[in-house]
Length: 291
Length: 305
Image 1 (tube, rainbow over the protein chains, first blue to last red):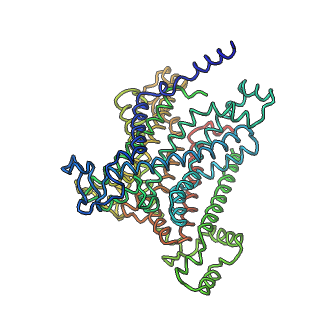
Image 2: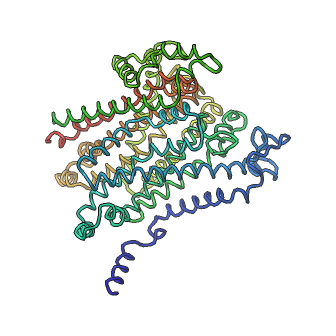
Image 3: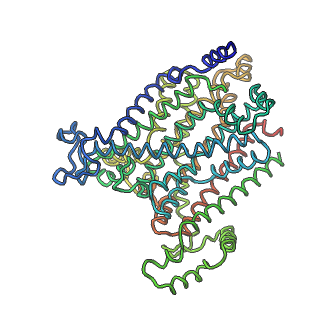
């Protein structure tokens, strides 16, 4: 019992609650991010219209703060769709793509990085080479060509993103696994006859959690920006689906006449990415990243 | 050092080889070229004819080897859409993109170096906070939005600069600004952190203790060391600008490789797409190599091993 309680208190000292360890700016970012995620989740219940509902006699209504009507708080687009509803629904796909692609690339990158740092030798050489190859590939051009030539579907976009966003996970996982090699608990687990997989997953992986969370926030932002750039170029999300990138693409034709339409969506992407980055910075600086 | 160099070069060649293989296979994967070329509703005999004509009936390995062999001599085949030599089509556009890239990275460095150094010298001051704000803003700003904001402000409202084209330096000013804002955060951060690390180091303390003036310590001792990571990051950012200028080039109608590749993709112009990937990758690899060499020259510690 005694040993159990002392490890309990040691763990408590080592890891304060996630929220407490984040810097104030990071907390603000977290709240904004949570609000956007909540709005996205609740979109079917809180949005005033369906995302593709057209009101043909109410096209290009300006937002309410620019003299619009109270029926459409953020106005309507060139074919009479309510922008607030589209933003709410668009957030769903935008966040979904960002998160799912990051999770898949995390699995790829973390397994490669941990294997490299743990087994060393030839495994490390191969993984290191693959990382160099990935970093030497122009991600935007290759994504464009793949999506352009294979036909753009949401699933394909997520697959392609996942194939290109694993490098930072691999680099971080490798270097930390390397550092942890000589720790007592890893040596002890080896001495106790634990298998490699058990040591990797049970002893090393938990220590990677926080730094990998930092990488994950970065990559979610990266994925969202790439998806919106693809959609902007007409090679990403297609109507009737909605994403913020697609909304920018639709608003750009009107940019010289109704700039607010593009600015509204641009601002939303800016706020979302800013919030994610703030969380990332907060995670990094709140507690020293000693592992 | 010689062995280090040979190893670096060998890795660079291997990386390029792998990328050429990957891009070749990926494009093969994307469908039957002959059918795509023949167009919808064409008869089987014509598809067969095209398949023979373009050598697509040969085994994959042979196709790859002949493509790579020609690519090494600078021959990337003919564009399906423009019906011209791909290398020729690229040459002029590469120059445009390079011009835009150099302009953007210079602009970003021009802002990042002095601000980053100042922020490190006065940690916690308003300059420091401004730098952090600028870095956060630049990082969160999607390049398609910043491009339009620049157009709306400087071209539409103020009428100072042209909206599109690449004929003169004035035409490139706005796209270069948009791209520079993209590269700025990484450069600002690395200058600031490199500089503040150097300022608390032993050699700077010694230099100060010897009675050297602050500015000579800052510029001769600290900055030189802070430059090492900056050079590496600047090289990477320059590479990213070349590959990532697609969006900016389409918005500003700059006829560089990004815009060209985007057009080629919409036309299923495989030879152009393949060449684009390989050419830009080569630039990435060369830039990393160049930054390593430059760092060897700046940082004498490299010369020991």
